[in-house]
Length: 65
Image (cartoon, rainbow, N blue to C red; front, side, top):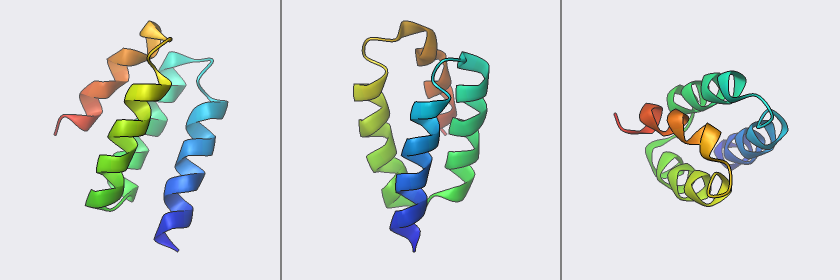
């Protein structure tokens, strides 16, 4: 079940990536919802996903904690 939440989070982040504010809110939600090892996977995925989208890089601050 937990894996489903990680995959769902990825889908949501892809869909809201048009709006950086909404994207940041979803990243913040993911930090509270996901398990620690899933959070590490999300960090890797996010770094790849936002590589061509510099406006979304501000959201990485939520992953620093």
